[in-house]
Length: 426
Image 1 (cartoon, helix red, strand yellow):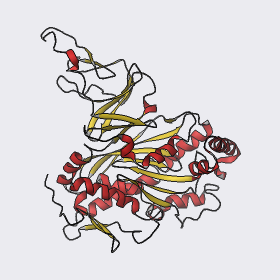
Image 2 (cartoon, rainbow, N blue to C red):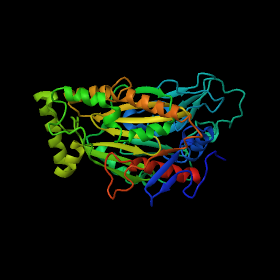
Image 3 (tube, one colour):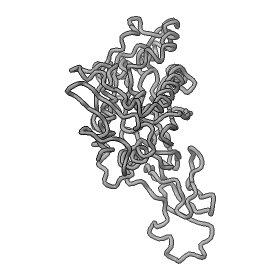
Image 4 (cartoon, rainbow, N blue to C red):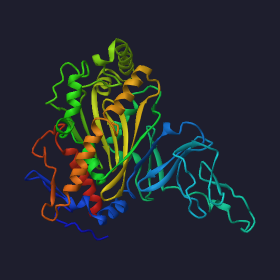
């Protein structure tokens, strides 16, 4: 596929490590041809997050949602196996899973009544006459499955490319951070009730950048920090809002993370005075359990560090004052749909769960402090990209001159763009 981007010695980006300059073409955010190529070269070849196993805990549970531009059903069949199927009847194409979630022994197409079980196998249709005896034999009319489905620590991924490598190899060092998330519970993590869905008039890659950007927090979210400063006991007593601190790391295959000391309370497991003495007892019990399971050093890292984890291309896990799984689907060059859920230990104390859910809404929700700020900024960026061809490049160079990157540098974005460039330039 021909694209309108100029190809230089570094591909479509400018990655000048000698002069510490990293540039991304703004046309990557506005071109229909680029988006079409992304669908072919990224979303059709990479492992894409689909669901969490806790969303389908019982046999015959299912969820239906868009994943990598495809409508999918993720289901646990009657034997307890996890399956992924394209949400389209093998007869005439109607979607067979019309609810966002449910529990049924079978999915019935609303058009002609063809019926499929939760493994995708066709098990019936209203009138057998008119078809040859062997017409439905050998699974020829079963629901179609993606090329691969695999699970890592209850995170379910799919891949549409039959030639794809393994999920573990794809995750690379990001697997360690999924371990940190999963290890917050002794018996397993669960997606809590409810979810957030909203949209944004901006290119999907802007939310990739924003989700792993420590540089913007104090400026863009000043009102939230002012609110916390005015709220007695919301911060650690030694918190300095002008010092973001922390480190950012490239995790391989386009994945990246920012990890830094948490200035506020964490449900697992850092208490702040705002939560009161009762909350302190519950959180300290969580911390003690972490120490018993993982030792002092790992327990401290789990409990006291915030993490913004990016798994290429479109999965973000914000492990901060709440633990949020966020995915986003490109619909057009300047429009995306976002879905977010809250993840928590199954055994979590009700008081701690209340803090978690409040934080999930207060900061990260579409009507919270952070998300409206971010939506406004990203839509302003998208509007600013109309000033072409006079202004061609975005600069993502911060921290290239450092031997060790800081949490407010842009290494994590460069990690994403280098992998994007590699796939798009192939």
